[in-house]
Length: 74
Image 1 (cartoon, helix red, strand yellow):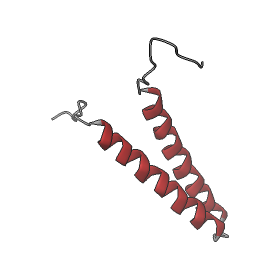
Image 2 (cartoon, one colour):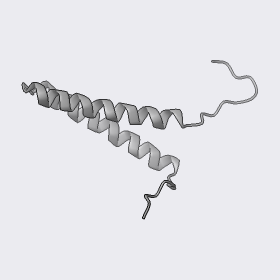
Image 3 (cartoon, one colour):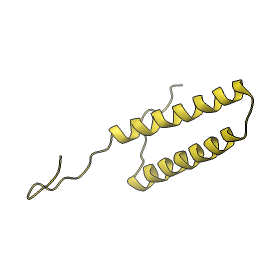
């Protein structure tokens, strides 16, 4: 049996996933402030990096709308 590589997610689903990941980062950074154990701090930092990387992957797969006429910006 192979893993499913095709997912049917809509924009709202992706937005919810991103919001949850940002909330998890907030929890982890708050938790990190109260920790004195260096190996646990390293694990928290690793988890935060993984979530940031995943957020980046999602961001780079988005197609942002740009009006064709009278568009001002980069």
